[in-house]
Length: 232
Image (tube, rainbow, N blue to C red; front, side, top):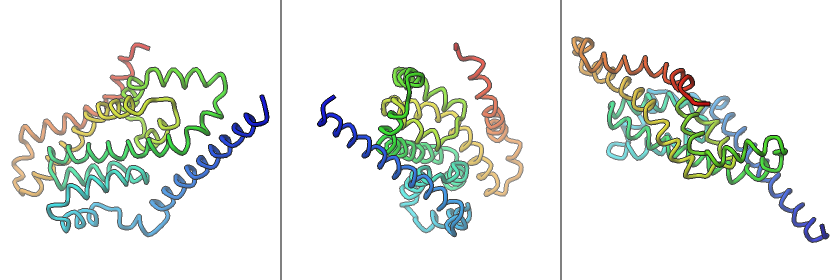
């Protein structure tokens, strides 16, 4: 290996390490911001609900944007999902939650891929390289499976960016994998909120409410069913 090649490789290694440092700093700063600063005091359903009310007709746009940014900053997805279902109802709530989750998941993946992939690849030895390549070849199936078994959402978004998975395999695997869980949760929360807001407590024994409760309970068994049914 000549001197020019060695210098080029050293330059790439330094750039990869620098980007990895920026990536790590971003993760630490996001977690610190959401957990240990006054910002966390505003991250509750009442405050965010009032914010959406003031947004008026622009509420869906701001909600989707809030969800996407929240995903990248490790804001709890259950809070944002529940808020969307409560404000927009079980059906439009599902649309806005899914859209915001997809935008946030895509942005987090791109951040991980841009800042961390080169450094992660340089650390992979021969033993782990074959797994990385296997994930790259089976990206869609891998992502779909992990989404269906409710692998932690935000860590997976960034983590997949560090692997060899292609973006579109990740995108479609995520989009399909979160549909069921997202719909079940938003349908349940949105339905209960509608009954609560109407004040008609007789609707608590309606088919719609029982159906939403059944779906919600069933959602906890989805990971078990998927794991038992996988062929490997």
